[in-house]
Structure formats: structure tokens, C-alpha cells
Length: 115
Image (cartoon, rainbow, N blue to C red; front, side, top):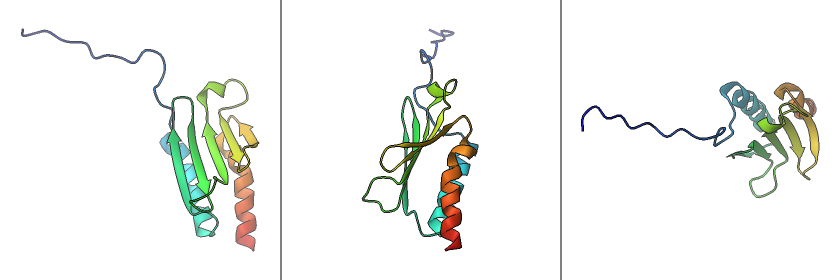
């Protein structure tokens, strides 16, 4: 059977996994690196799921994350796809852009560096 082409199966609707693009991950890892240099964070985890991509930052590896940075594209049109979630699970900041959502952590870093 020469000349027979079998079509490649295409995923039905939407992406199978939500992730961070290079610029987003670079911004998050830059903040993480500065917090490590300040001696505050020691570990991180990335969870890439169907509905959300989550970056979790830990003070120590054996505890709950101090902050979770979530990207949920389904919320893009409403309250914004970015969320900063605290250790207790409360949403500290939500928005359409990553920079303003990371602002509370940036302020905390400034306080850590000043001490």
C-alpha cells in the first residue's frame, strides 16, 4: 500500500495541559531566585494540570507552600487568570497581568532585604 496517508489524531477541544510560557516562568523564577538569595525560600514545585498551572514556593520542603501562583486561563475574561494564594488558602491578589499579582511578594522581598 504505497501512497496511503494516515491522518494524525488531533486533540478535540482545547489544550490538554495548562502551562507557563517562557516570559511568565522567567519572571516567576527570577522572583524565586531573589527570595532564595534573601534566605527566605528553599524549595518550589510546579504543577501543570488541565485547568491550571501552579507554582508553589516553600520556606521548608516539609510544609505547605507559603505562596501559590496560579494561572487559570478559563478566568481570563472575568476576574483575571492570575492569582496569588497565601499559605492558608486565601486569595491575596487576583488580576489579568502577572506583575501586579506578584507585587505583595515583591514588597515582602524589599522588607527582607532591608533587614
